Amino acid sequence: MKRSLALFTIVVFLAGLFLVTGCARKAVKPEGKAVKEEVEKAMPEETIPEDRVGEGAGLEEDAVEGAAVGEEVAPAEEVTPAEEEAMVTGIEDVFFDYDRYSIREDARATLEKNVKILLNGKKDARIVIEGHCDERGTVEYNIALGQRRADAVKKYLVDLGVDPSRITTVSYGKEKPFCFEHNEQCWQENRRAHFVISE
Image (cartoon, rainbow, N blue to C red; front, side, top):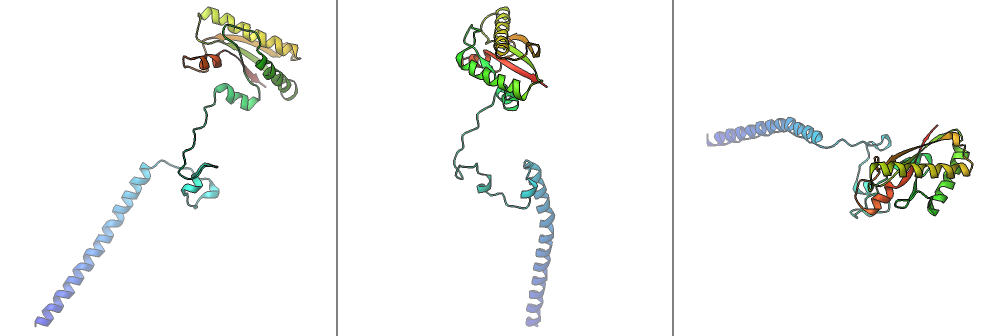
């Protein structure tokens, strides 16, 4: 009798253990699935190129070329709107000294390169030359200075062979700065003749 009672107790214990483990497994699956869904919702969506779908994305693959894993990478320099446009059209802005509208030596080289593009690659393009100034001085004074800058650049382009009927000038003075800080570097970026090209 003791033996059958012990056997019965063991069978009941094993049956109970089986039920508890079976139920626990069933309960974990939905909970685990719910947790996984919550984690996926919280994680930002990452786009993987079609040719890399299914590949593991280890640190080595995500490392910047030329940098060791874990090594700090210098942030990319910000690109100004003028530089971005120059990347597309090849035409670059020219810059001026404070309170001046004469063409600087470095601007001459840039304008000569611009003329080659305008006479060869963009023969039918219309050009708007915008004169800009830094924030110092009155609105009226800077509108006049910006116009002188735009006109000086137009004259230089025409002297190098660009048809004057293709060129329009406008002055924005200090009203449309490219850089908004209050220092000499920023002011230099704003003293410019900006090119807008339309086909």
